[in-house]
Image (cartoon, rainbow, N blue to C red; front, top):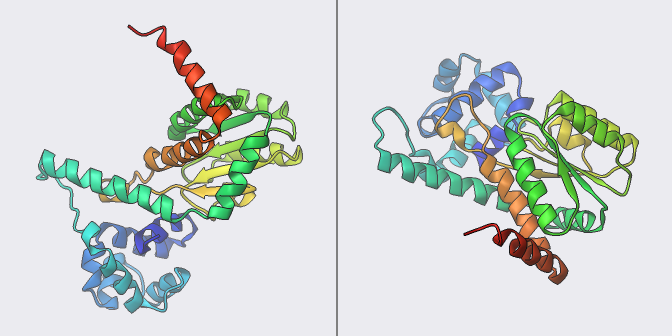
Length: 273
């Protein structure tokens, strides 16, 4: 996980002054490399002491190490998008950034954690995927893929229906929560219901220290680098869907699950020309 990913992942945990620093760095990583601390403080409208505290929160020795870490990833930070960016350049930039998202998600995987997740999924009776807002398409895709594997799975758009179904789940089942910020109140309520019923919980969020991540038994971190393109949109479905795809392909190595996929494909192929 590079320093920009760390800043993005921890963004929700920063104080207001630290968020100002983070926002400036995310938008101007290359410029910060050549900045004295006083200039960064002035541009971020914070004190130099705030920058020092910001660096320590990222487990850095100080501002100098921050600049070193930014320099290490300078190639990616050369990406600039504005109204004059050509279509060809924009396509190349998007491809480059999306590739770094997948690499970051892969490099951040804890193999022991992933093995535990695979074991739980293999042994559950039913999997309930829950999400809200722009993560719902990820949950729908995940449920479809799990059903292909022969793992009974459900997903609902409506929170009231999600709640009703969660109340009927048993401890042999599994709740998988997909959230951008990891702070959705409605999803936290579902998690609390599941915890009371001793149902295992797996979450996928952009923030490993978010409330949803902390409440879950197991967590996977998705990554977004969309801050290169937008000021306010920091969630990429690609990374979360990649993690689901990763689990799907690992589980599909089992012969019986592969047969389920083949049977499903055979049946639906009859509807094609």
